[in-house]
Length: 309
Image 1 (cartoon, one colour):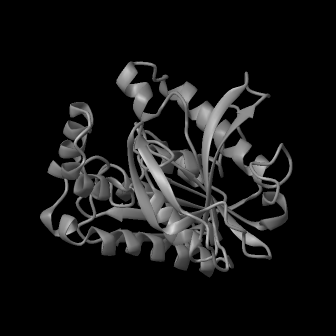
Image 2 (cartoon, helix red, strand yellow):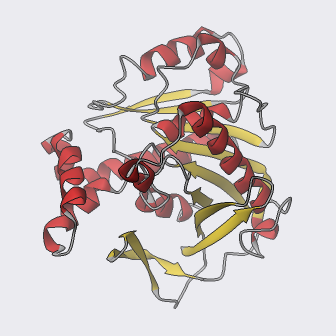
């Protein structure tokens, strides 16, 4: 698959700047492999993605992916690559004000501001992928199937994904979105009315050993409300519990943990951060995290395919 990294400016929101990653299907490529920079000076090379390759001709379904709190747009590269290899264009942007460095530097914003900014970021990305704003790349508007637009996210990004198909603050449901994917989603602050007003099918991916958003406080109440609805949304929504999956089951953090001992220059704060995540991850998952991450990608693809993706 192909990959492009870019910076864009939303001139309708005080020139808000977003770093954006794009993964997409290609027929074949001789371009260099993609190198991801986790933090400045610390990188790893992809085994599958190639920089600036030509996109496969035709129209492709679009997934806009929203990172979790304290995350970055890079944290889900393996999942996004797996989805791109299945034919999706996947776009992931940073959410300034709720990223890793915002929290490290104390520049993070309050929840209401964060929700509003995240909704603006997601909808800006859809606009930029469908030709309603300056495109992220020139070929995107001709390559996105506007009838197959999906939103996904992890943790707080799962909340953000869900919010695109209901009412939150001044935002109304985005009618372009066909379905949402919420992985280990943070939902405990959302009201029953929120879930009753979701107007598109939803996939909940639940980590069996998630200690941050455990099923008891997040997935179970959300799913109970969704299933209480007697309508097509409830019938077409899905919940998949993934064996041994931790909170970071869909992200690259297990890879970072695996690579960290070989990186001499890694800052202590990052090393401690990775250790804290590893301490919350079962040995069973650490031993087979690649298979578990693949399960996430397969589950998303099967769900969206059932909706006609």
